[in-house]
Length: 427
Image (tube, rainbow, N blue to C red; front, side):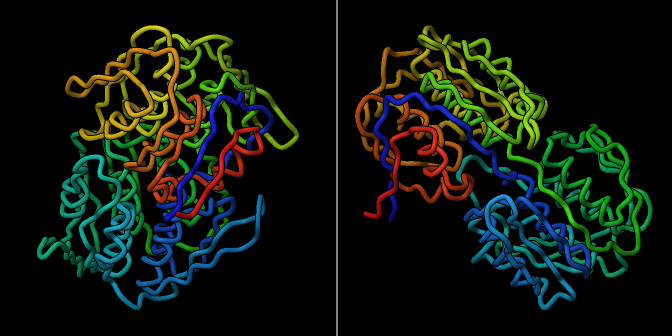
């Protein structure tokens, strides 16, 4: 089993390239099931999650191939025909996004048997919205033995789908299913995240008819068939945000390339309130964002997670890392998932002063953190421990780093190139 070791106290500096978005590439790979032609995705990150999902798709008959290295890398998904319409527990239990194959399978094959999902233990994240939406489109759905069994022998039908709350996953699934449904589908209270927008643009490139992209109301006119496409994956705003926080925490000065401040949404004003400088730049290769950490201690800043364009739940834990040594008291409220504070006890091992009151973490900044052995509890919490380790005096050892490998590409390599003393060991 691997561990990541960090010797803290170094200010990060240099340039850091942002990878393709994990939260976009996964639904984009699933969208490949909607066509019998090849979908080419460029700029895809190499992650444990993309490898897991590739195995799920291969189980259904997809040909998934990686190509290239570095900036020219990508992958393709080609499903001439399905060899199975069953996504097994073995794979789906490892990663929640695998469950999203339910929509494309129903839309194109008319049937699906998909295991109920797994993934990070950060809350129940029920799939009721997915199933109610597909049922409203004419699917017959039964849940038995840990599997969702669904049929739409006459095909899916367009419907009005009024979602009671914003759900990125449900928006992905229902939007994809609606592209091949008969007639018009209207999805209200749809997610507006940049990753949802990216998937919608890819679907349009495949021949889908979608209006309202980037708004709360999506209108989809079903088509008989989708074709292949060649699509560049949007950059990862969550990775960019986490690295921006790492730079601020280390009092560093780094230019993040391939991303602009608009993509980071509510994180930007929060970081500026905390004392960091974020300056947009343009380079020959595209947009960039220069991040300078505060010269002294960061200032305590309170945030509340919300659907986009609000403060991203995936950046809640990394932001808490920065607040651990801020001057004053910050309140960090989590409204998306009910169990996303598991990193608090690990930060306490490094000397953080954090108390929990329901959905809110109250962080009283301390003068410094001290290195210690800690354990990653989920994907985004693992990045929090990296940020804390960069701040801490002494050596921090992070175990269970397979969580990190699910969502951050070449983490040690990127941070080392900016001066961090970070490496991986097999124990």
